[in-house]
Length: 145
Image (cartoon, rainbow, N blue to C red; front, top):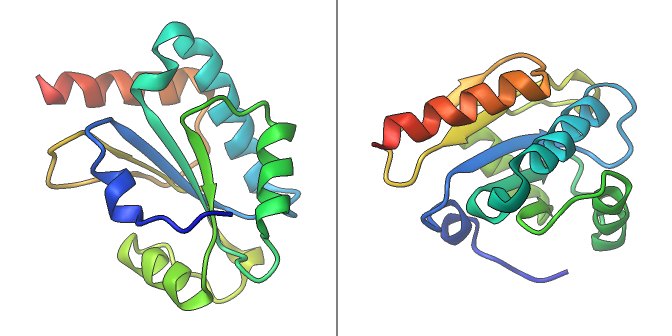
């Protein structure tokens, strides 16, 4: 329920893994979110070293209460945040990631990874298993070195 500057979180100095979801989705979003949940569990003690971000593609319906319940449903740990906002702001973010859809039912399974200080994001256009997400994360960390 707080206002935040997304750019501040994206440049927090932590690796960032980001997806676009909505709270009432029954197809792709639960799979993406289960992946984030399992990923956090696999990180164990390192869970706070990475920032997971889910951004709503349905800002009209994803209220702070809906987002809180959603994160609780997937046992989100600290470091996984679900953001919504004004429709025009959300659409601007979706366009910046080339993830804009005119109908939320037409969204694709997209995951974006970013290493601190990197110029570019890594875009993955498919559903990832937890093992695949962990491998992509490790590759991202190796690129930091």
